[in-house]
Image (tube, rainbow, N blue to C red):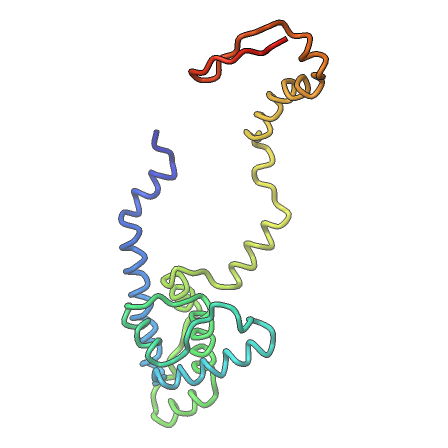
Length: 201
């Protein structure tokens, strides 16, 4: 019988295709955000490597984490939508890009060129996170903290416990049965599957 979960999946359609298209769109927007600010793939690669090293030294991430490459060819593949980014790549790249947009140097360059200083809106950054199929760290932290003291299923009966309660009397009966009780049993024929067995007195 179909449940509500299966109905929700049907409204999404082809989930595999959706993930592929979302990640491709992430790469396209990431490229646009970099190009608007004059942030080349090479510069993103250099800044991302430095940021990765800094985050490791601060203990924010561990060197053994599945961070992924910060090399320019990897960035190019992600932007082209032919390679999935890791969580740590998205985290580091977006941190570096935001820092670039908010830097005094970037504002100075725009002023010298007599052009408005482009912005990197938080809404766009959040959209990039979602298109990458990940959620921002602050959202993850919020959900985790909220869930620590929650017991959302507490009011629902446990099927496992219910089954154990039903079998408990039988278990107690078996545990109370002694060798003497078994010896006192009459000669009985037991059937296990198609094999006939006899319990001798």
